[in-house]
Image (cartoon, rainbow, N blue to C red):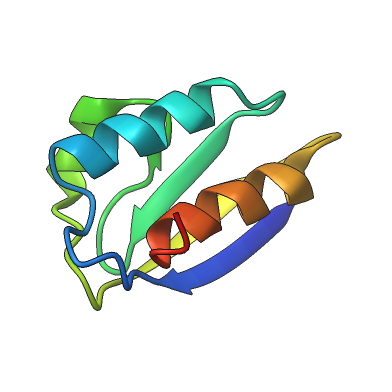
Length: 86
């Protein structure tokens, strides 16, 4: 299992367009990635509705998790969206 805690620095958090972009990238990964906001239940990262339910805003901490071949690369790619690198 690969896990990475990320502080969301994307100014829009995971609302509307950023959530759609994040879910799209997650859906193209070779592994299932989950995302958990501190104090919330985990959601599948490829679910826009699940992401919106988390209510992730700029400055929030989230944990990305995945297991299997390609997990580390998937987590790294998704983390880069959250930290505003794209």
